[in-house]
Image 1 (spheres, rainbow, N blue to C red):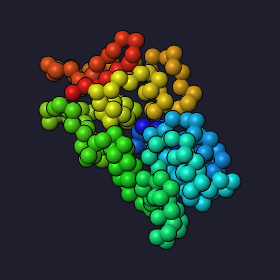
Image 2 (cartoon, rainbow, N blue to C red):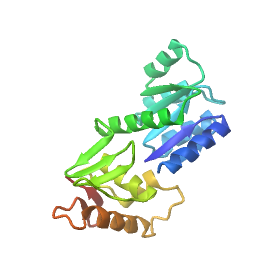
Image 3 (spheres, rainbow, N blue to C red):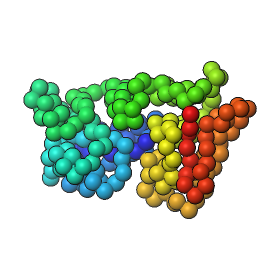
Length: 222
C-alpha cells in the first residue's frame, strides 16, 4: 500500500518513511504544504499522513482542499498541539484520525492498519479469504493453519490483494500502490512476484485463490 507523508520536520519524516518501508509500504514524502497538496491531488495514495503545522500551506487547508476536490483517501492528522479544538478542527475538516506528537511508531502502525482496513471494509487485522488467513498486525500468512513464509514485498502484495479481494487489479494498480514512481511497467517484476505468491499460496491446494484475467490483471478471489 502507498502512503504519502506531508511533514516539514525532515528527521521525523525520514525516520517514519524508513520504518514504514521496512513494514512493506511504499512511501512518498512532501516537506511543505504546497508540495503535499500537489502530491495528494495528483499522485495515487492509499493513506495520507498530514501534519497540521506546515510551511506555505497548512495541513487543515490542504485537507479542506482535497476533500472539496472529491479525494476520499483516508487522512491521519499529525499535530504537536494537544488541544481539543485542534482535534475537532481536523476531524470536522475531513480527517479520519489524528495522532499527537510525540507518538510511538507502533501506535502509528496500528492506526494506519485500522484506517486501511476501514477503507477496504475489513473489520479486524486478520483478513480471512476462504482458508487463507492474513494478519496485518503480525504479517503472518497461513492457509489451513499452515504458515506461509513470504518476503516483505511478497507480503505487501498479498496484503494489497486481500484488502481488494474479488477485485481485478491491473499491473498499473499494483505498481502504483507498491512500487516507486520510477518503476518500469514494461518489466516482468509484478508477474514474477505473482507467480511466487501463487506457488506458496495455491500449490498443493484444490481450490485456487489467485487468478489471472488475461489482458486485465490479477485477483485474489474467495
